[in-house]
Image (cartoon, rainbow, N blue to C red; front, side, top):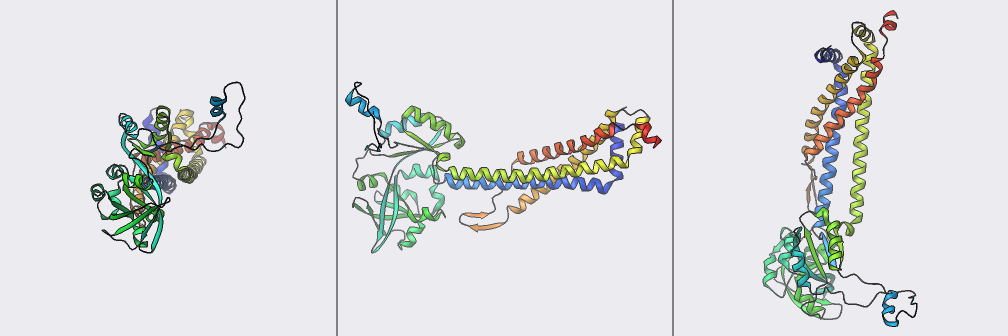
Length: 414
């Protein structure tokens, strides 16, 4: 008994029931196409929100965390002769500066995973133009390093970041603040810190991220401006932003940096836990929908093959009476199921790609999102077709086992 005979019989059974074969293949096609589309949409959406998150959040932020009062602080003063307890501990009053920031930056540059470093200081301020005043926060940065990290250039709608680099009294403001204060390129703005110190700065650029809270409150200046506003020395730095080659490794490298430097490492994952939770929920919903569709398609194949066995029960009995073993009968129906799965997979890949491509042309036009975010990855198509074929295999295997147990004598007598 050769495989070619089994395959020829399987082909004959499939062609004899063209409508049933078509319906089963369409079920697989629909399941795979939806699998591809849903994964492409969810992955594209996740990548879009990650891009938005990483456009304003560093992969790792190093800073000095506030320390709670501990009994060990009293132990050093009172010695071991007493037991020291602290009731209702408070935060220790300490400077939040990074010690010797230049040395820290040089150390970070030796790490092969680090691709960008940006020291900075942030201060809450009031920005005013005449009698109009807006609250905001100003970041003292090296604008060239900041641009390398967050691609600020792509958000600029007026001016150039190089103008801030060359102008010590320049400021780059968000489009929302520029609108609220009626500011244009070249205008002057007064920035006042919480301690009452003020600086008169010239608007050298206006950016627009389409994130309302950022555009209405955020400003960029040179580091020395914030140091002057806070009455700090030239070595005063509170944060060091770090970007990595592979941002998914931020947690691991952050732990290493904390152990080596003693500073707290806040990763982009820990700073955006709600966004990551939302991504996990989206993935779970998409996978649940897709798996349900493929299971339904599998039951469709099972029902069709099951009906085919009942309709062909006499032919199966004759095959077994003429020398076909149970394993040959199993191979016939599994071959049918696999053919249905392969046909459905090929059609599903084509239809899924077309559906994804068409959806990627849907115009959204909100914020900086122009079109529906759709990703195109080979693994989505490969996993979808594999899932369809595996589902088809098991959908054909169960009725095939029943067909192999048929007693030809009882069937022929009946």
